[in-house]
Every structure is written in structure tokens, then in C-alpha cells.
Amino acid sequence: MEKKVLTETAKYLGLGKVKIGTDETKITVEVGGKKTAGFVCGLLSLVRKEKATLEGSTFLEKSLTHNWLTYCATDLFHCPTYEAFYSCLKHIDRQLANRAFFCGNLLTIADVAVFVALHPFIINWSFQQKEQHVNISRWFDSMQSDTYLSKTYSNVKFSRTLLYDGTGRGH
Image (cartoon, rainbow, N blue to C red):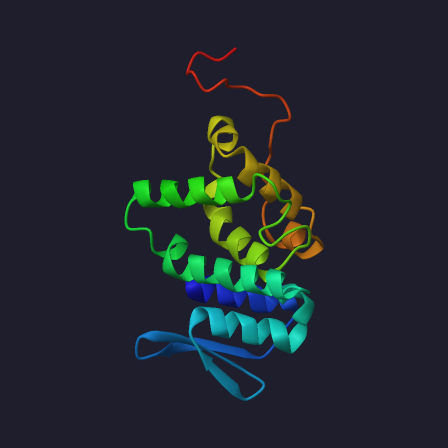
């Protein structure tokens, strides 16, 4: 998953010549002759090379960006079971309850990374699953309006009408 997210992020940033590989046990990123090891450091090297504002504009936003990228690398990308993945989704949904994006009110590279990682799953969700993760669904729907993401990834439909009440009986 790390390699896919790094590759897609490089494309998102418009970087042409990026080498992504593995060095013993770590993923490596080489851009502009500079080699970086590890998912978080590699992704941040791409962002700092092309569009540093996506790391965040304040110390808090940068710290949150680093935290979310670390969460992706240590938890989200390595769920051994459906239950572990579901637990990650619940955590993400709770964190998005009071904010538009992962690190506040502006898009950061953490949003792009999580979008790329979750798209293959969310595109197959039923409307009921989308309603179970209402904050992820709201965030994901807003991410789809990004010019690059809307051209590159299939659009996911969301209902504005609540179809399920959570009791299993419908309305």
C-alpha cells in the first residue's frame, strides 16, 4: 500500500522522475538525486520538493500531518483482519467529526494519502456502509471535488437522504 500511495502522491504533485523502491526492509523514495527511507519521510520529501503548503501552514497542522501519515504507515496500511480495518475506520470517522479535513480546515497531503488508500474500499461500499461512516463519507465526497482526484479516480455516489436508521429496520 505504501508504494501505491507514494506513486499516486507523486502523480498528484506533478512530479515526473521519482524512483520508489525498497531498500532491505524500508521503502525508499528518490527525487532530484536525494534518497529518503521510510513512508512518512519519503512522502514529506515529495511534498517539500513540489508543494510544501500541503504539509500544513502552521506547526500544529504540520504536526497533525506527520501524525496522520504515521498512522497510515503503522495502522491503516497494515490491518491484518477486517475487524482491525473496521477499527481504523471508526477512529478516522471520529476524528473527522469536527473538522473538514484531517489537519483542520485545509487540505493536506494526509488527506490525499488517506483518499488514495481508502478509494478502492469506499467505491464498493453500500449506502448503508457509507451511512455507518458518515464523517468519512462527507470528507470523501468533498475530496472528490479536487481537480486531480476527480479526473483520476472513479466518482463515488453518496445519498443526501438518510436511508437507514441504524436499527436494521429502515425507516
